[in-house]
Image (cartoon, rainbow, N blue to C red; front, side):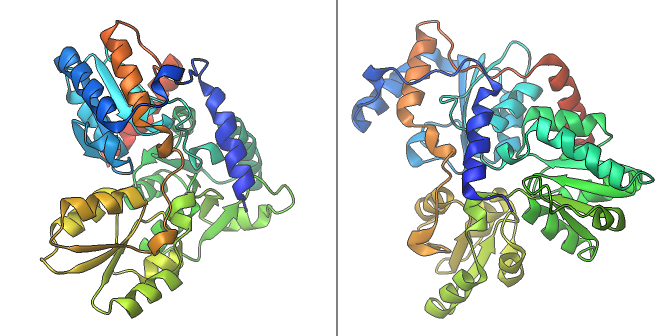
Length: 377
């Protein structure tokens, strides 16, 4: 199993996907919130319709309060594509900005305020690593047609790889449809990089007994016979935030709040999903609280900033973090500091672009094929 040290190493390596890594200038590092807010608003007024800001659900308040759109990753990319803005500021992580670059027009620039905002889970399935594993997996099952599926939370080169092998991309909402598509086309599915979403999807399809796990960090732990005999091969990656939740957290919430209901993200462990009242994407979690009756209690099993947002947005509902004070924020999202947002906006006012995300043309074309296949289902 990938440990935290390995995951952090993968995250660091992923920073070198882009050679335009820039640090925050010293004069921006000690801004007070009031000054920063005034400067952001002044820059946005100057830029007008030339800029659109996207704020992921997991971003801190100081980012989402300036966002034109708030949502999950692919939803935000589509909002950017439909906007006329020349500049798209993505308050998210690298793979999200890549997706926005893939589907926006060529004359739109996608900017990530901090290039250090690199998703650890996406870093658990780097392209060279997957290429090597693919050779081993296909050799273990030479008579089977294996279709790779990658979760949206992956880099553009992995999306491109999946397209080149007849596969596609999925979100947490349509993973089951992606599996069905793949089984219509082939014999086996290789699902990357999130093993928990893959396992939960297999259960949804009644295929929980057809799973093998591929651990790229354990050369001795791979079982070729198990791969050959299984219909679903799960890459051993995970979200550090969602793997933290346990069934004990749900039991404790229900003991302390007998009327509480629990909604969790499908990136959580299987035991957590089984114990919850509802499971779904960040959009589903938001809709669950939005549609709750006043006075209802909902415990939220996802990143803590979204729980905090829901507490503010829906004060009539008792919104609780599932694991209390132990709940984590996303350490990649944390890199999008509002001081970075101030900097990139003021630089745009001065006519200078920083931290532009540009997917290589060949990767972009193939990744778009993988996204188009998802949209077909």
